[in-house]
Image 1 (cartoon, rainbow, N blue to C red):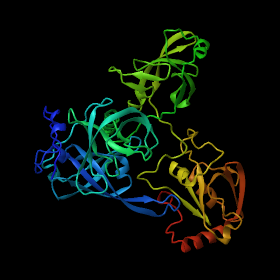
Image 2 (image 1 turned 120 degrees about the vertical axis):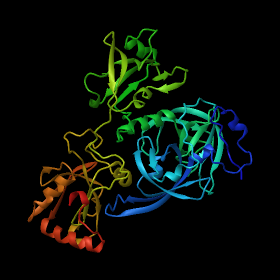
Image 3 (image 1 turned 180 degrees about the horizontal axis):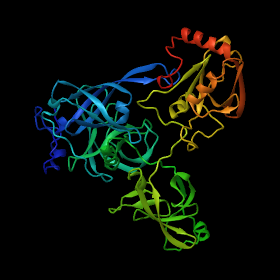
Image 4 (image 1 turned 90 degrees about the vertical axis):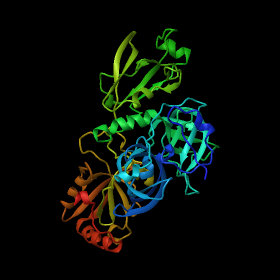
Length: 484
């Protein structure tokens, strides 16, 4: 059987030459650190939140510390059972998610069995490779049981959308094959033998388009969890900028010929009043000169986006900037922040809440719900909370029943009010509905173009309908556990 041997003890250059030699698995083989993850999942159904959808997935991982495996978040999200296999033995180990950061699509899986580390030498996180550097992707792609190796080069390094979270962070494009099952496995720098990134997604359109999470993002994640919790990454949309490549635009803003930068077009209130302002020209960020197209250059000349200096910092930190404001250069700071959205973000490893009332099912609006329902509202659910428990509530599903005759098809609506009282969150909606024992209940709905639709039902009939709908559809409780 062919084995790929890494020379990590000062023999990094020998990796490429030794990648196909015949040899048995050895106790000191560095590739013993690359493992296969067999994951069973239980993900709540967004449309029927009282039920789970079970599934299974295969992923890869790499040991970076005793009993600690680095992998992708999407490999272990909603995991209820994780089996870990090493390529050099047939023993089965069990793991559990220790930390998961869905923003960065990274997770740490812990294996408590001390025997797991026999013959395993943890791998080191290396530096971000440069374009055209040789790399080796190692993992367990679909189509086989044994470890797989695919060699390639770094094609591009730039900000990209992470499919798991829709966050926009630094990514590395490689032409090494990245297939389902490779996710979570290391991509190694052939010169040093260290981790140059973690494989995490590919692209169907085009050929040889694989993507890896770079060391900067990995190191941010590992530093973030040192306090025992995951804070994640800053939001990229807290301010927007316009390029200054137009000569007329530069003259309008009185920019000297020797200066470069970008103009601030919009600033989210989350950044505070002492940060950047609209019409500021950002000249420098974190000591890097900003070009007219919004890029910076690292010490080695590698290009990065303006946001690079922000998302590589931890939440709560501040990034120093120099801006051109009202004819003077001003030094200020940009807080590394995350919006406290009214709407819940992606619901990984969490159960959606719900409330069944008559033939209606209500739930708190999340990104999962919007994605599944394609609902569009007039009210702004992407705004910051206006008070601590401010959460939008949707009428997510309608069961066909005589109790709500005339209102089928009202699913996908935002509930703005109950009997004229503004709904603060799902718990508040439950309180308002249950306070009405007799008479009518009037729901004020936002249906996008129709933003003030009234749904009027009989309170007594709705209570009778609830029991009937639950029995018919095998719903064990009329509400989620957090509302009981």
